[in-house]
Length: 59
Image (cartoon, rainbow, N blue to C red; front, side, top):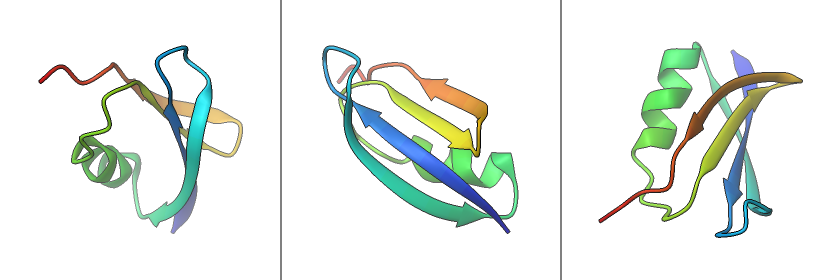
């Protein structure tokens, strides 16, 4: 299992909250994070490696 750091950003692009999550693959953490309805961007890292950035969610 890999440990991922998920940064939930605020409207200014600053880190609002950080969560650690363990998943088997990048696809698993992408699916997990994609279920979030956080209104601003979300960055996902595995260590120093940037995995994905989700753009702001538009209702």
